[in-house]
Image (cartoon, rainbow, N blue to C red; front, top):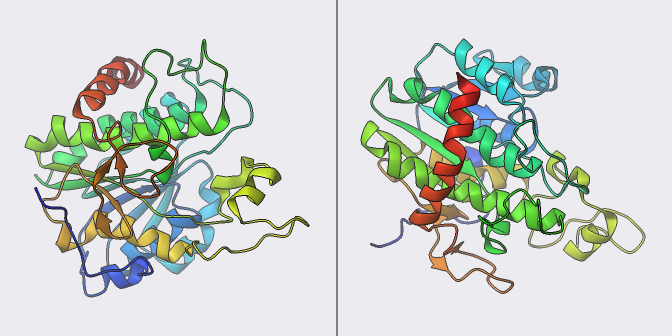
Length: 316
């Protein structure tokens, strides 16, 4: 099957990919929509006419966007706390056209666990979003057609899910390895939703937004790592490398997948720079593409089966 291509290049902005699209009457949720990529995603969807709910740990952080767009609101959610996810889902009443799983945490310096005993990055980036999707499934099927977009990362190329020890109970904790595993899990979540819920009219895709320096996501990254990434000089000053994107550019692929007519009916794929990416062998070398372990239907089903009992128990 040929890969999906679009006319938008890697430097296109979210507003450019949604230009001319009318989303009036459409309903969207964007997790982590109060800042960074999430905020630009919210702005683009709202500018096109959608009514958007920002799902965020602190709704006060969304004040500026709420003042900018009267059809945007903000509700509290803590994705690492499945009781919070349950409360959010129980309070939701509207049909849902778009669920953008954007919120995340990155490279926690020490091992932390959720109440379910899951490593915190896997709990937040994957399990919380899975629970949110499960809880909102009736809303996603209400109109017979909806989209789920999972924001992953190029880090999924570096590590698959270690099913023998996903919670770092035996192996030494590594901040980047845990982050990479959680981002692979995000791709597998989109694959799983496509496989399990596709017949219900729910399309699911995942994407890497590219390198976006200086968002809240990177708040736990050490200066040494920032220097290795080329976003901090030897004197500790932040710099913008040539490969970096703005938040408006990084949000483009997210918005494209969530709302563009060009992606109607497309499900299960992984996108970067507004184009679907080929499956590649993961490891230390590839810079683009989706790792075979991230696109593996068997791995998606295995992770689904691991997480679903936890999610169903928490949502009762």
